[in-house]
Length: 127
Image 1 (spheres, rainbow, N blue to C red):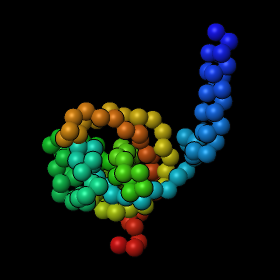
Image 2 (tube, rainbow, N blue to C red; image 1 turned 135 degrees about the vertical axis):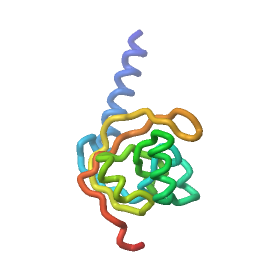
Image 3 (tube, rainbow, N blue to C red; image 1 turned 90 degrees about the vertical axis):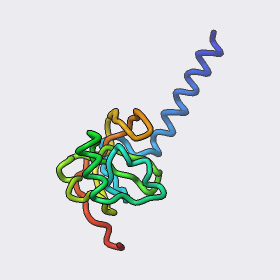
Image 4 (tube, helix red, strand yellow; image 1 turned 180 degrees about the vertical axis):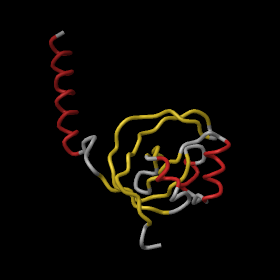
């Protein structure tokens, strides 16, 4: 019993110390990627989105505007949705916070992802 408590305590301390290296929730971060949608977002590794496809998925598939992050190849719900819509299908730089999770539908079935709340979204200037 003591060994289990010791092992659990050690694991807890290790996990806590590793969290120091991750950006805390609520801290402003910067990402680069595409504004896409949650329905087709996972296809963005090999195929950039178009504004037409993104708008169609939001309207017809009840998808949400999303962000495909180049660095980790993940899809995030992108808020505020009305601001994200202005950049549909484009490569952008997003500054904001990462917090919360939301369920959504994809063409491969149900999924869930983290939410980025953007303080700014701007076109990537190198494109």
